[in-house]
Length: 184
Length: 100
Image (tube, rainbow over all chains, first blue to last red; front, side):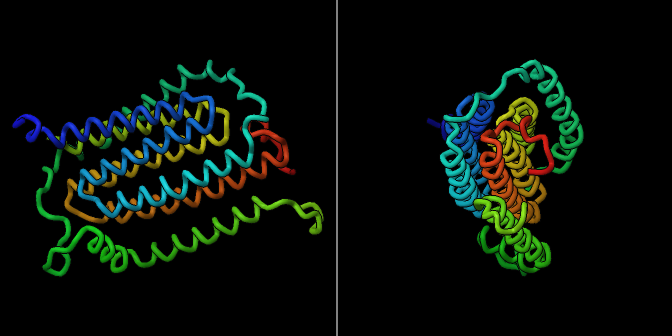
């Protein structure tokens, strides 16, 4: 029992990490896009759990709301709309590329690791609470909100404009061609 | 004890898997999902380093990354709808002409 209490965080981490990696493998492996989308959903939820484990509660909630809620519904809608069953099967000739792709991915991951691991090992993990604003301790959401609106107000507004542009672009591209505007 | 290095390894694994998917899969929908995987790997790194350095800036950036990922998914899925309507396929190799 003591063992369980001592290693609780590690057990949760390894469980969630395994679910995330298996979900990612599922996205790669499933032929059917619906199964791939559900595997991706498992990865999203596991990553949200990892965020909770790191006391990033706001990010975890946003991850569940935006990814698991919004993006995933969008994916499933499109899969239903396109009706993948009537489409020709995905060609498999690129499977020949698999060893090269795996090699390239491992190479890039190793390079990233070489770049990032010294950073991870150098500074000691801080146990100080993150939520110190103006001398008082706040909750995670409140502290991130402070940082967002005080230090990152301009990027925040720019991102909102990007989102608006993406929304209009998606509507324009997704609607049926009316044929009234020449050949656009 | 779970350290930043643990999260880094997990993030690198997810990144590599997403990259392999982008290269190998030819289904446009699946390729978009793999891009989301890569962005999730980035988010894990951001939060892990935010925790380690005791600075919330990393978490603020995750909010931005998630927003851009949502915008990218919306645009990409709009393109998929247009492609499926035009050529009755979601195979990336079939999307090889500039004018519709």
